[in-house]
Amino acid sequence: MTQPVRTERLRHFIENLAELIDRRPDEADLLDRGQRLLADLVAHDDWLPDELAQPDPERYRQYLLHCDSRQRFCVVSFVWGPGQRTPIHDHRVWGLIGMLRGAEWAQGFVRDAQGALQPHGAAVRLLPGQVEAVSPRIGDIHRVSNAYDDRVSISIHVYGGNIGAVKRAVYSDDGSEKTFISGYSNTHLPNLWDLSKENPAP
Image 1 (cartoon, rainbow, N blue to C red):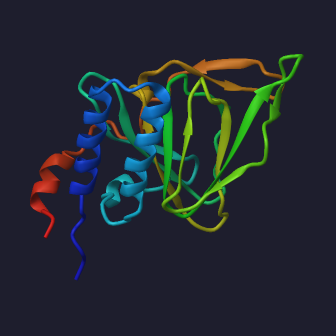
Image 2: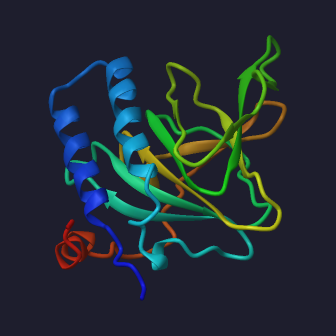
């Protein structure tokens, strides 16, 4: 028998994060407390509906799970097909990345004296349950890839805005940039609130 999808976990995460943001913490406190909330969410792999976990053979997918009514934050599932990766890019808002399924590599970049981009430290391998943060203050330019060439990986991203509508940039190695707005892979938001009522916690 198929186990019910525990979508109430996402609802609780959204409620707790909204309460945290309502208190207007500084960014360091927000990222610290937010990482703990996201770690609690991705410690369980029983809440993401299958329709928001489907890969694409051509490129990674970015599914919107929730956008705050005031666009203070959003929650997104990134679904990586085997071997898929992003270009070097930024976000221009704070972000949290929590690994739900599989694994991914994240490589940070910084500009050198000539403005070209150079890898900053070793790539970080993110495993299920682990969370890392990005922001313009602590480092915001990176490239992310599925750590596996033979399976799907899924990470949950939380951003300090409606990331699908934020104008940001992809970068060439020489540091030149091209702005873009990513949008989302899904054109409508499934009503996870109603789903959570259908599958209440025991």
